[in-house]
Image 1 (tube, protein in one colour):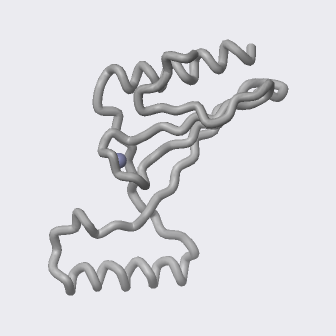
Image 2 (image 1 turned 60 degrees about the horizontal axis):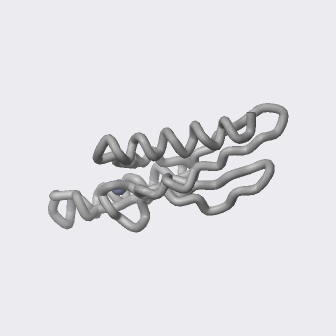
Amino acid sequence: MENISYKIMKIIENDNSTIFEASCSCCHPDHSLQLVIEKDKDISLQIYTNTYYYEEYDKNNFFLKLYKRIKNAIKLIFTGSLKIESDFLFSNKKQIEQFIEAIQKTKEKYE
Ligand SMILES: [Zn+2]
């Protein structure tokens, strides 16, 4: 599995679990996925990511941005949740193949 390196990095590998960190192709430092592949009675794959509220791509003026902030804050205060969109970009075939290979080879190791 030494050839898995294009935008995906193995963090931990032991007898029961392997953790990879995958980088988003947009290169934003906060965009990454952590893949946790574990063997228990069966093999599981968990994907973790952090999601943030950003305004850097919001082209609205200051007052519309402020309105959206207040609206979202009120929604969070009164409902306890706030839906935020996030994405993770695979920009080319090689990155997709490396991602699949990391999962496939780790799955085969634990079978
Ligand atoms: Zn990204």
